[in-house]
Amino acid sequence: MDLKSTKASPVLADPAPINKSRLGIHSSLLSYSQSGPSFSTSIPTRKKPGKLDDVRSNGWLDAMKSSSPPRKKILKDFNSAEVVSDEAEIAYLSWMIRYPSALNSFQTIVDRARNRKLVVFLDYDGTLSPIVDDPDRAFMSDDMRSVLKSVAKHFPTAIISGRSRDKVFELVGLTELYYAGSHGMDIIFPAKNMLSKNQLNCLKSTDQKGKEVNLFQPASEFLPMIDEVFRNLVEITKDIQGAKVENHKFCASVHYRNVDENSWPVIAQYVHDILKDYPRLRLTHGRKVLEVRPVIDWDKGKAVEFLLESLGFSNRRDVLPIYIGDDRTDEDAFKVLRKKNRGYGILVSTVPKESNAFFSLRDTSEVRILIDRYLVSSYVSLKSGETRFENCLQVQDFLESLVIMAQEDGKRDERSSEACGYDTD
Image 1 (tube, rainbow, N blue to C red):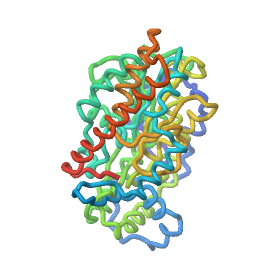
Image 2: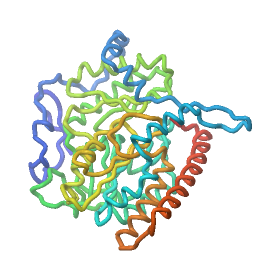
Image 3: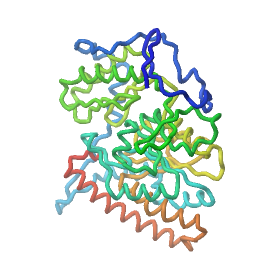
Image 4: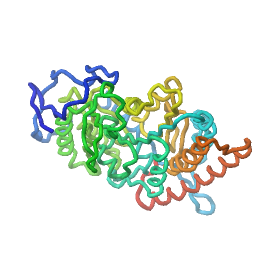
């Protein structure tokens, strides 16, 4: 790929697209006039942050705190065993009235999935792997990888992550899945799944094995800009202990999970000051992370719609999409599935929070159980015409046994997380 200069900024030129159609996306949303300031590849001299009143008045600090739920409150019982605060548990159980457990509500999903094709979408961090102090060590368990491979044999399965697509593939390592990185701004899928050359604005490319694939990157012109902002963020935060900056190709992330909370305003102000020079970039909040992204009408919800259409499942009544995620950015996907009751969003969270999801799961162990013992076993049985449950009592007994197993797995995962330095919020 070559860098071609324009009047104001270099634009990354990929191979010629198959067609100019935009899957219903107006070209004005994907390509901007070069009215913003030009940018260079040099790193500016380091300077002190602006007034901290800026990030207080624009709500950044409040958003940072609200997207960073506190750790569970742990009490000691008479046997010195750790138990969750009754108050926190009551609040969570009350919240589950609005967002029932997907495990307990699975028969509802099964009933709706009958005679329909399931399409599975998943986030990575906090959904397939625990949230950890070091994002480079957010490894998925072998058991989770095994159940993912199993579910992908039966249903189209895609991972939509804020990480770069290459990094997600490196962590997952399964060729059976579809991958969308940078919050859906970098999507790759096999060329054989292309419905029509007139329907998609994709580029022909090759994967790691040399196979022909389709590549969709609606923000490709922002690559040089994101690279420059990434370098600036690395330089300006290098003296803040615990801060970590990552380049996710089409977005840059500043992690403050390991930063003293007293330094959060400084980090926020640094990012604020840099973004003043980049009006075509915007800030979003994740779980203890600030993310700089292009100002385009694209998110995980649009990525879900794109994949459904490109795979031939858009607007079909015999398809049931399910999206499982834990982050604020996953809410865009939940909204898409909630609209017109199209499918089910499932929020992974250990604390109560507002969501557009239908159901909830506590942690990654419950995600694994839902995929393995529910989606694969139950749905395959239904698809083959078998009757898995003969009566309501069998359904209840089966679900209760799996909930107990999920709780036991969760306790083991939590003990393992604490031993490895995982953050259990």
